[in-house]
Amino acid sequence: MTSHPLLKGFSVDPVLASLPSAAKVYVVGGAVRDALLHRPSSDKDWVVVGATVDQMVKAGFTPVGADFPVFLHPHTHEEYALARTERKTGRGYKGFTFHADPAVTLEEDLARRDFTINAMAMSAAGELIDLHGGVQDLADSVMRHVSPAFVEDPLRVLRLARFLARFTDFTVAEETRVLCNTLRGQGELCELVPERIFTELNRGMGESAPSRMLEFIGALNAWADLSGGNRVPFAHFNPSQFELLDSLTGAEDRWVYGLGLFLNAAEISALAKHWRLPRDLQDLATVARALRSLAQQRPPSLDQINQFFAQVDLYRKPARLARVNLLLARLFGDSALHSFVQVAVGQIEQGIYKSFVGAKIQSVSGEMPVAEVAALARRQWLENLYSGQFSI
Image 1: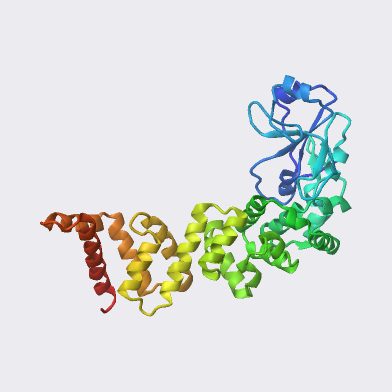
Image 2 (image 1 turned 30 degrees about the horizontal axis):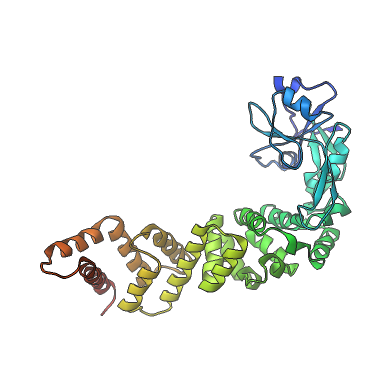
């Protein structure tokens, strides 16, 4: 262990102090890495060496781990895991047996981690434990696996891709890239649970350069394995499309751009079903597809707009269309159609449309069904808006 000027250590609170003297607590992983990179870190991963489950519970920790012993601190609610080793017992990222007891050392725990920059630890005194060259790889901006056991967990390929989206100046060590290709070649990526695939991709979509994540996956020819054979738009992106993706803010807008503008409705539905996409995200992408198709008509007819509004459920969900309309206007520039949609959404949200239809219903006498009156009123409302924006 050596001291490092960027590592300040941590206070041993009464809960930690109540553990047996043989137990040692360390901060590990991302918090250490980020401190050395001068980056903020939102949470800490803790490892406890030399303690038993009973001793952790006696100190006040609450056990929460189903597969291996993980505990919540009674006051900070941060997670503390007992040092553990793991053994591959099956395919996929869940095919592991974990072993945790007081005899497992910190060195053994760090050896099972994914990348050298994530396999460092810090003691309470601020001492750095770097057994795999993580500090040097940070200095060289290199993502490198810790051991050949990297190939036992296919999820690490997606974690690597996600880190590339965050650390935009990092490259992948050639030997690590070879292991990623090995995992893909062995079909291990097909074993990943679809929801977990989306979780990792979605986290990467929220980073500063998601294009780096997507390009890395494409370079591995891994999209077919990850998507169950469904079409993935990013596999066919060109440099300018990746650049535009990166220019957007937030994961959701980037998904809507990628899915909604490069897949048709059936392809969006199929990929959403496979990856278990959130329903709201699928709906936004589908609305974007429909609006972009309508924009190809120059200008769209009143009937086409009427059908489009019904298709995207404008009258019940105007905010959804407003969100997509704003995104597409930002991507492709404002147009008469985008202005028209903005006005229509505004009149619905402000109650103008509802008042117009209500007045028409009240003004009609006789036996005409209310639904028919409402449909005619809606058509007239649309005609009024359309004549103000387009020529009939």
